[in-house]
Length: 336
Image 1 (cartoon, rainbow, N blue to C red):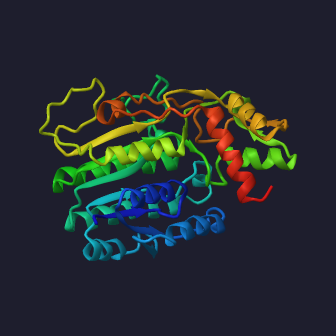
Image 2 (image 1 turned 45 degrees about the horizontal axis):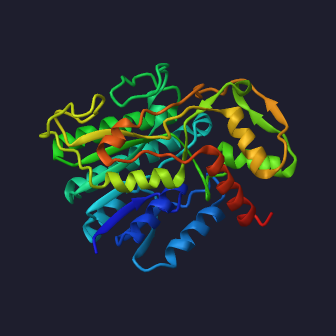
Image 3 (image 1 turned 90 degrees about the vertical axis):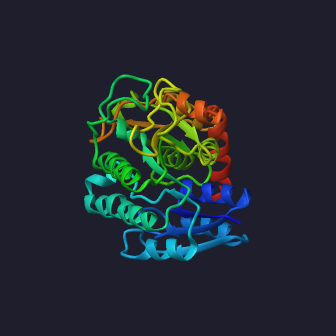
């Protein structure tokens, strides 16, 4: 059995990726700090599902801890790395900026140093659509300039991309950075809008709607995202191949490195997403209209044509279907 290392394995996306790898016959070493940024019992519930299966090894620790990842690479020599551990949240970066530097930059550097000593066949590393920053031209393409990030979170993600490219170039580490868009679905994070909206609507409390509802997001269902990640495992970037096979291929000319969007290729108005939750819950939302939050952007929208060119696949789950599945899970998990 080949070994995969998944950082952030008890997180929302990390749990689903680890499960998909186990289902595909991989041995998975998961690393997670179990931070209290949001409800640790939710993380533990995800982790318990993974621990109940053969082939999964759990390591509790912070990825920025000196030597932790180096020791894991030396012991397990993973053929695949899926790097998902990060301090998430745009708004929280205004309150605790140091945690973003420690985890998103320091942790990523520790990972790359460990991989330098024990090179895996492929590293898949999570970035974010927030890296596109102030770009107003849409849909977002991977070949667009992305220099004007709007939050510290976004800045750490774009910086991680730059650091990863330098390591890919210097040490021939094959790296695919994937920029994911607004991911939602069962087991989703409580700090994200789908969870907060559903919770408050079911409890009869008003929901905060920023920018007075004039927001659009490329909502991407979790299983679509994970399928795309799994398919990208075999799409190892190789700079010796002819660049330009796809118009916006981000393949580096000097490194085995590429950036790939993973999104639903649709910019859904936030008010339409709220309507989908109302329909799934059978309840009306009381909306508290708010101004735009610092660091937020009014819209995101992915061009996923590069992903399709590389894998033959694009995310496709309609929001109304994905929201129904999320609300079903929410009612079951919280016994509502």
